[in-house]
Image (cartoon, rainbow, N blue to C red; front, side, top):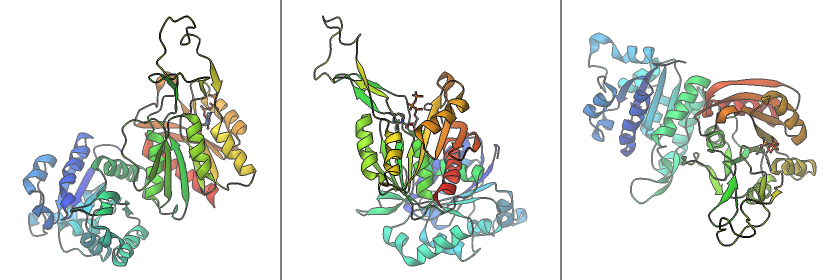
Length: 405
Ligand code: CTP
């Protein structure tokens, strides 16, 4: 769907309502038309003037204002995307019950566009069977209810129930708008993903390593978590990225550390994705003090490298030895003949799927978008069109899912 979209940002009465201001700005900066529809209680936390100034559109809560414009029907009919953040337990219950007792619930009931719900409440309320049943109801109806973040809640409590960060909500909402709702078909699956670049120390200040922002691996983790999987990410060096919702993140530095962490967890995993840009070589020795330029042995200009283990191949071998049953997915970054080299690499690595990117001219690294081909062990090739790394991740998961059943 192209810009500008008509985005409705629904805001319920929770302390996290202030974060909706950032969400409105995010959509406005992307060129979307944004209409904020708060509940009456939301305005106890953020004033209507703030939302009006940020969105450039009027803000109402009830169905009896601007009656001549039939707002309670029109806003929902014209919406391309509805994002509710924060969604309280009460609002989720009202939507699940099909209520239309204010402008926001009327708008949702009228709409036929994708609806994305970002919950925020105390852990007890989130885990309460009543809320969980309401969430299931909404998911069954095709509403994407995102997983709340874990962390500090109002007061001293911590646990699941925190509102996701606005940028992460916007990324997921755009993914749903472009790709469709996120089905919960990964529930019960344990997913192990490597991400980022590994680095091999030369001395205490220098290293050799591979370029990688970690974005594609983290996006795969995000999508898997919001589709119900239990996710562990083993991450080398990455850009500053929000931790994927609910995922355990294990930090590593070198290829051998990454291999150790991945191998230790492989037996438990149902799906393993090697999205990390693994440093193929490491210095033969790591100097304990900083090497000096121009010294007699000139260790820097004649750096001797030794080959690192192939982590992906090792995981496939582990499966062949019956030590894991996981579906195994690799990545290939190629500068030339990407599809041809990609197919050969898949055969060499004996993985189930390989996502092949063209990285000619430094493309992809650190960028928000990606594209390429998914080549599969059965010989099939699916083109992945240019899209955000989250949309590409959603497509990769659709393909992986066919291998997990
Ligand atoms: N990979 C790995 N261990 C390595 C090198 C790569 O597990 N030592 C994984 C990567 O995470 C990726 C896949 O193998 O999933 C392909 O990585 P790539 O760097 O494209 O392939 P290489 O095997 O290193 O081949 P080349 O660099 O010669 O293209």
